[in-house]
Image (cartoon, rainbow, N blue to C red; front, side, top):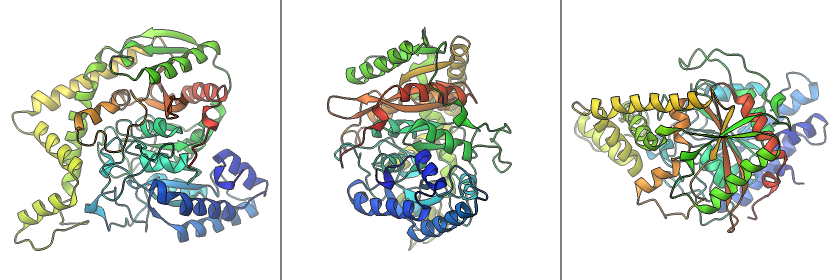
Length: 486
C-alpha cells in the first residue's frame, strides 16, 4: 500500500510505531497531488512549504512522545472558505482572489494544536453556492470515478481530493448538503455535525443559521477522529454550544441490534433514479439483517423543504455578501467615478452568475412588501420541518434516506437550469433547516460504476448514534474499500 492510500487511523498507527514519518507521509501525498491533480483540479492552492514545516514539527512531537494527538502528522486538505492565517482564502471567487486572512479559523487552530499537516485549499462552488463545483470562479473539479462528471458541491474539491488519495482527510462545509452530497458522488464518508457542534468562527459565511464545518474521510472511524478534534465550544461563535465533546471513536462498534431506523416515505418519491433507490433500499435491508428494526415514518413537510431552504439561505446570503463592496478588502473595480459606481462595478465584476442570482433572490425576499409573504413564511415552514424530525425521533433512533436522487451527472448537464440543479439537494437540505446531524456513507455503485451514498440522520448532538450505525454498516460491506481507477 502506498502511503497516500492510508486512512487517518492507519497512518496514525504507522506514525506511532515509527514505520513512517510525517515527512515521508506528507511527501507521498504531495507527490500524489502533483501526479493526479492536473486531471482532477481538486486544489486551488497547495501549500507545500507550510506542509513540510508542519510535518517536520509533527515528527519532533512524535519523537519526543509529547503532545501527540490522533491527527499529529496527518496531511489534511481544507475547503477554501475556511480561513487559515497566511494562506490565500478565496471562496473560489474573483472578488476574494488575493485575500489572505490575518487569523486562523477555530477549526484550523484545533488542527494546528493537534499537530495536523495542512496541505492547501480545495476548490468549491463560489461562496459555497452550488451543487457541482462548476460555479467556481477559477476551475471545474472533476469526479475521480468519471472525469466527465461532477464531484458534487459545494465541497467538491475536498471530496475529490480524499477519493483520489490526494489527502488523507479533508474539511468541508455544509449549508444544504455540501459535505454529504459530494461524499455520495465520490464514494467517501461525509459528516454534517449538529448545528453548533463545531465553531463557525473563521468560516466565510453563506447562510449563518445553516452553515456547519465537518469532515470528509475515507471511512467512518476517520470521521469520528476528525470530529473529535475540531468539535467544541468557542466563545467567539455565538451559535457554538457549550457541550462536552466525547471520543466519538468509542461509538464505532459493529453492533446495531435493536436500533430503530426510520425510513421516510417522502424520500422515495417520483423522479428518483431506480438504481439509486435500489441501492439505498439494499443498504437498509442489510441493516435490518444486522438486527436493526425498520420503521416506516413520515416527514410530511418535506415537499416544502426546497422552497423554504432557498428563501432562507438566499436571504442570509444577501445579507452576508453585502460586505463585499470594494471598500474594505477584496477586489475593487478600477476606473470608477464615485462610491455607488465602485460598489456596483465591484460586485458585478467580482461575483459569478450563481452568486448574483442568489443575492438578488435573497434581496427580493427581504424587501419591503415581500418579507412577510416569503421570508417570514419560510421561517414558519422551517419550524414545521424541524417538528417533523422531532416527532420522528420519538419513534426511531435514526433516519435512513438517499443522499441524492441520482448518481453524479455530467459536467455542464444542469448548469443552465438552476431549478433542476437545486433539486439535487432535495434529500439533504431538511437536515440543515432542522439543525440535525447527518452522514453520507458509500452504499454501492450503479451499473455505470458511479458511487451512491446512504444518508443517516440523527437528532441534535447524537453523533454517537450516527457513528454506531454508520460504522456497523460500513464494516459489513466492501464499498468503502473500492478505489477509482484514475
